[in-house]
Length: 310
Ligand code: NAP
Image 1 (cartoon, rainbow, N blue to C red):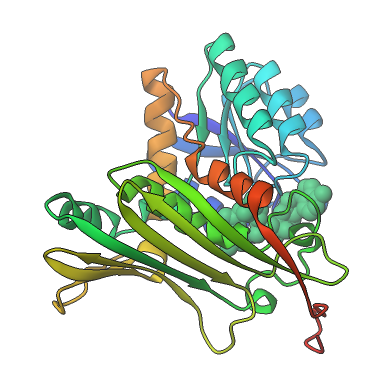
Image 2 (cartoon, rainbow, N blue to C red):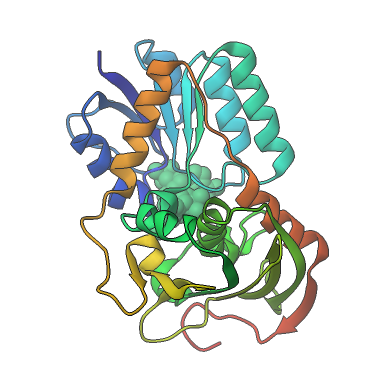
């Protein structure tokens, strides 16, 4: 039987990825949406989550595509209504919220899926296979993009809980934590916070995994294209996972890539978790971000003006 899904928050990622991925995935279908501003033709549309849950008893699952702030209350509403839950990254604004959601789902026998879309990048498995037979010496992460291009008008990213440059940076951490053999810990962090804003526009992290030293640079002030890559230096060659996990190049050999399947894989994974009566909540990427906010050294930098003058 196909899993009836209700989608909440018709913003950038819901439109670009969730709607097409649901349509392209067998065993799931879009049954309703909840949006403060939008409606979809041929799909029951409600002004908010409560109205959608009340009117759609056949809705088996809800996928939340809203900003992290406020997502906890929505997620609890979904679980209390007895529906399975899929969460955009990050799973919540805080670790405590995420853990409460995980425990609440378990108590109710519901599936909760905290997604990390970058882990489904088409070259990630190739990177994992290549690394599995090598000893990593050093890792270098560069995650740089233009915030004006990728987050136009998104005020929430600059508010407390919005993560700032860690909103993309957490994708790099989701890859790092799934590719390293040892647990990753934060050694030091620098956070560049524009005057008048609450979240960083850039961050520099020193991390380690066992004996491996890892440097990471996240920056939202990049112009002319983006760099989302993780470089690996091993005792037996070097490699780079590029384009956010879409391309893998090792020892100068041709890149491994292919079709963009991230969100289709997420919905296949969600469907399979529900069928199996299981959940998947890995909080390691969010924990490292929380650690950076706990231990990072803050530096005030020039004010950021979205119109391009700052
Ligand atoms: P967005 O464009 O700002 O969309 C978020 C949507 O959530 C809004 O359009 C709005 O939809 C709803 N919403 C509910 N309460 C809101 C509030 N208080 N403030 C703003 N919006 C509110 O954000 P997004 O880029 O889609 O990101 C949503 C989540 O997906 C974030 O956690 C982000 O990290 C994650 N994500 C984004 C991307 C990306 O490339 N953009 C990629 C992967 C993951 P309605 O008007 O329909 O209510």
